[in-house]
Length: 96
Image 1 (cartoon, one colour):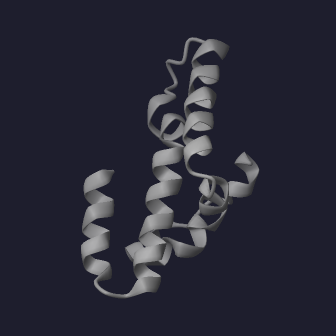
Image 2 (cartoon, helix red, strand yellow):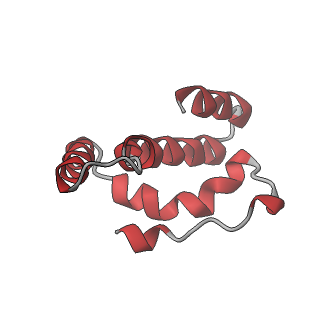
Image 3 (tube, helix red, strand yellow):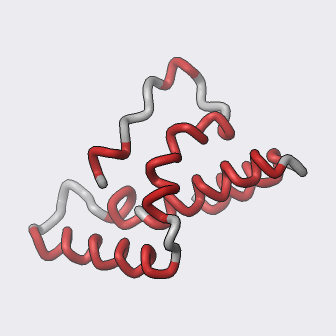
């Protein structure tokens, strides 16, 4: 994930708007990484989910813009030139 966001930063160049979009992406994905990457179908129950929630909460305490970045991420996804055939981005509002 870090490599992808680093490459996106390089391709954003000197454009402040594009750099901000990539920073929004990085904040959103890294903040919610426990849900995106760590919570598997092999989850053993509520304890594993609570551990993910606590990890996200710790990140949110350090990054006060986390929820705003998560909500704005679909609008900034064009910074990554995601092909139209990939489909629609799900609304993050269902997770807030």
